[in-house]
Image 1 (cartoon, rainbow, N blue to C red):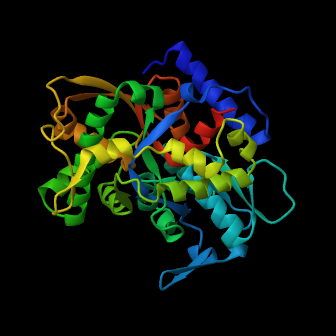
Image 2: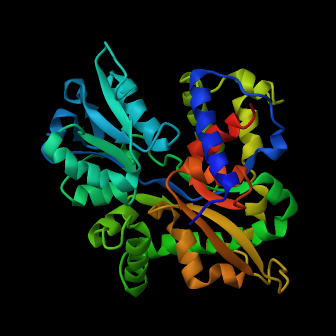
Length: 397
């Protein structure tokens, strides 16, 4: 897909913002309302993992006894791991493990270091499998951390699992449904319709996975293999099943504020933003900004619990007109965290609620989805919650 000149420029600006934030440079203030998104639902929890080359002894890195993980610093020292990038939850988890559990430094590859450290290099998850294959010859890369289905597929290709991300932080936040705030303020009807269809799809996907057998399950795995493959035919079917089992699909926003506060405090500790960035924009602090970012009103309007469990309200219960609307939705490439979006499209759920989903992308990383949202190129995006948080803070500068 060709991107117009404005979006290309936004991609450059988004990248520049992250670099400047890391160096502490302060940008000119911008109007919050013109540069913001709202988080209106979750997409998933968990669904990532750390892996190493097949010739690495995992016991040198960790031992697991009764679910308790013990980390061994000597095994990690000087290793080089691939990461999706600093704004991702995967990078944050790997960094937390290395610094807090392993007790080593965590430095970008190529940067000189004197203290015992683990090195990282940024690689798109869709390219990690090929990079692992090359590393068999040059032994430069020892492993990485990736979201599903890349984690399961890399392990199926001969790498070794170290731990899944949930073994470090159970039920950790990952992707969310984000809406351009200006669009939400002016197109509440479309957001409500989209969310109702998404909730219906997410609940159905969860029910199918809980059953784990039958035609519906195999049909879902067929879709996962198509959606989750970086290139056609490159996702192992058994790996697709493992990837789905490693991911919790949900829509609920409960506890997300507390979880994102933990993420924000980590980013603040890294110097990616300061309290002044928030207070200068009129917020009392991290918690106040996160409450501004998360909007649970639209979700509460479309979900009902009638005794048999929560479900999406029907179009009739929502008193929807017969009108139909196009919604531009940005999504990530080969990311099975977002399978409920694709399942809902395939099954006609969005059409049922009068929504035509115009898929924008696929994008390689969450920062790109955020660029599309902030530039108004997309109305809604499925994106990792950490890049949604960090780039929303950066947009305040």
